[in-house]
Length: 354
Image (cartoon, rainbow, N blue to C red; front, side, top):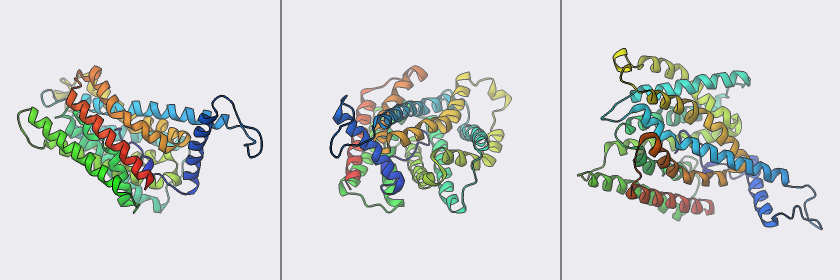
């Protein structure tokens, strides 16, 4: 749940140099765990070069992934801070969407200039366009619109299905074959999200699918599509440069829109400082700098291991919503979040097996 997060393990290449590199890192950790503190084995068939450096690299990559996951977990509360609620509206969701993209685009432009990054090849633009549609426009806009009407704790349950949705999109878009068990888990995860929305509506006096939940589900599907499209060009462009090019290409649209939707003087008087902090966070961290830690963690720690770290994100989002927004984590939300995360975990096992 993170914002514009990278594709999980199931959309990473299973073959080729990139896949082999990640499998080698995973194997290094397993070998180190089996040896304990004994160090490299000696004797016939033993490796001649110590794997200590590789193990340290994997460990650092793991903690970089944990850091990025924690940063991404603040996205939902920060978006709620920026947009406010129906009872206390703050910044327009349209402004929040454009402003975060404009801020990330400006930072990305500086990064690409400093690193003298070449332009993407013509064959990469289709995937970049899909990634922009999903992660720069679709996810932020639908999320901002929804967060006006639902709490961050509520949204955390809905978007907990993002990893499973991304894996399903990868299977469909990349024509990958998955097991029956994986698809059953995907259907179960979607069903849990719908049931949660209906049950939540019933506790509020009705029994209908809330329009904000429909927006959140749409955001999940769009960001899943964006993750898969972004992963398709990551090997060619470099992980950090993918998000930068996405934001830079969108900058000619996002910057004018941010200025167009800038709040007028009458509205500015009623906007809290926390709303501006929320916009700054989702633009500078959720949509940009958080990815540098995440992509490096994916590279050093291995995508399979890092994708499991994402299972903690819904719970951290709930945790951050308490001090930042004064929300309360109720048993219903926590129970459904546990069920969705368990479904995602089981689905990943089926996906890897398939």
